[in-house]
Image (cartoon, rainbow, N blue to C red; front, top):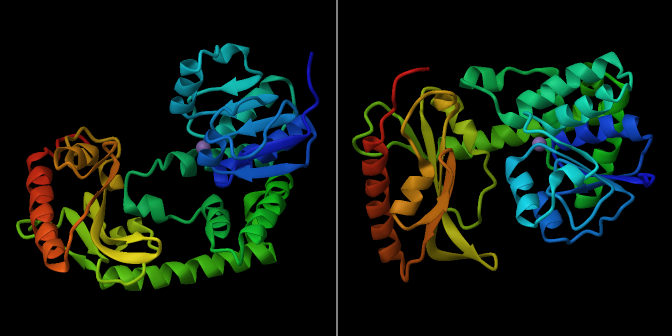
Length: 334
Ligand SMILES: [Mn+2]
């Protein structure tokens, strides 16, 4: 028995949009719902047997499920569900768009030529498969459209409307034509000016720790800001393309109010991608009892009762992070 799919529920990112576009062809469906992984995992949006779900955790129930995140597959098994019984497809590919594309082309659906190129772009963008800053910044048509997608929207509703329009554009047109669409082009420009604003903030916040003569770890301290600045921390690598990692420091905020606490994020740069190295951001956060994360990116925080205590804690934690970081081998290879 097959239930007719009436809606496509998909992730709000580039991979989610491309997945929905391919699904739209495969399932002859033009109704889209956009969601983040957390709201699906918490069952905050109603999803039922007439929904196909892409690039998101498996919900309580759905008609079809397409995904590529190994963690989501593990969660299905932990719930005692045999993934083989779920209609759709799971495959640990670089993008969910690739999984959906393989599924429908394997079932004999003829895909328009432009979609194969778009899916290849989704592979690169979604897996962040860059091994240098130069590669990351190289502007492909897919990255331009992704910039348009990530531009700050006027409102949540406007962003959802734009995503729905973008799915149909991606389904019907090659990426270079989409990038020239007036609305998309306008959003790309707005993304660029937002990046320029972030670069100014980053320039004013960057320093290196004592002992870091080779400038391995870019430190960005935003803790003097009275409001949490919106930052894309990878932009620091434009200033220091040879760096191996980035550490950001922010004040903690509670109910919109700045506290004496500090929050930290530590991530490895694309210069370490695919290299055999010993740098582990999660290990540093756990060892210092600040927080948790995986090797590539981790976060932590510390509470302080006064500004004086906060300044002392910051100095101590930065010294400890540098000690641990410098003891972890950079390794050969690459
Ligand atoms: Mn994805």
